[in-house]
Image (tube, rainbow, N blue to C red):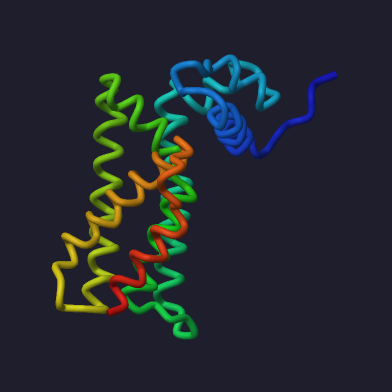
Length: 184
């Protein structure tokens, strides 16, 4: 008797990879482990993904596309206060809360994975562009491009310090103070 067919195999693979990456470096996760975690054979995994990079790309795209769509939805919601300082707070809070996958990509890129590095830089550019556009809609007193990159760099740095459990930095308070600074 054949095993029941799974219609959501790509989703299962991505969920399995994300679960494994929550406790391991990407270099320590094998395709065999991902297949086992997903409850599928290695052959089935290879049908959908030829290598781990492709899984990382899809995982990254999934969470970045969601962040992108959430930002658009939030900034276009007329019932919300989306002023500059609120926009900055929103971007920092969301980026810090969802940065764990980026750390895997940073690691791989720094270890010489050129495809991951290029993909990461491409997505940063896309995010900087949309954030700059949204900032430009709210102020003309500061360079939107500068402020967009400042937010992206801040969010990565804040996530790193949060991950390190830096006792000298309260991330939530830092974000609140940063938002307050730009409300003046």
